[in-house]
Image (cartoon, rainbow, N blue to C red; front, side, top):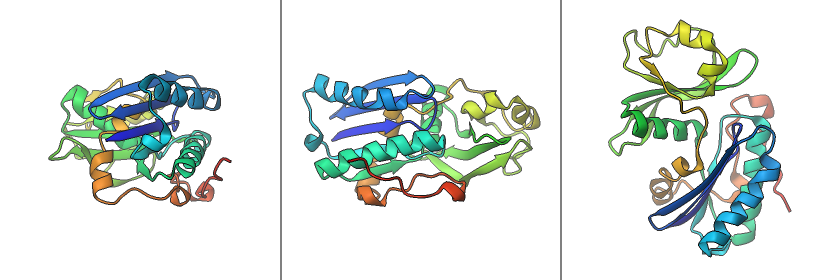
Length: 229
C-alpha cells in the first residue's frame, strides 16, 4: 500500500510516506511554521522515494482535534492534493495517533490523551488497547475542564499523554489517583496515523476530499475548509 500522511494539528508539522512496508517521516516541532514547512516536506518525501501523488492509494489526514489554524492548513493541503490526484482521504484522530504511539512505547493498556484547547480546557480522549494493539475510544473525544475525569476509576492503571497535561499541570494533580505515569509523547506523528489506514480503507472509512470536516469539537468553528487551488 502507498500512503501519504500529514498532521499539523499541534506545534508539530509531521509528514510520513509509506511504500509497502517502508515508512519515512519528516517531523518538526516549530510553532506557526506549518505553512512554510508542510509542502516542502511532502515534496521531499515523494522525491526521495521516486513517487508521485497519482501513485498513492490515499492520503491520510490527522483530523484533530487540535489547533484550529493548524487543522485548516492540513485539511486544505490534503484536499488540494487529493483533488489533483483523484485520491480519497482517510481522516484519523490526531489524539488516537498519540495514543497509538504510547501503547507501543509504554506497553499501555489504557491511555488518556489531553491536548491544549486554551480557555482553561483540554481536548480529552480516553482509549484502551484493542485486539490489534490499536487504541479504541472508551468515551467520545470531548472538551474537558481542569477537574477530575470522572470516567476514570480511582486506581486506574492509565498513562497520560499529550501536551495538555504539561500545559495544565493542575489537571494531573486533580487526577493523580487515576493516572499512573505521564508519557513524554506530546504531539501526533504522521507515521502513527498510518497504523489506522489499512483497516479504515478496507472498512470504507475513506472520504472524498470535499467531505472532510476537521474535528474542531467547538462547534462555532466547525465548518469545511476551502480547498486550495
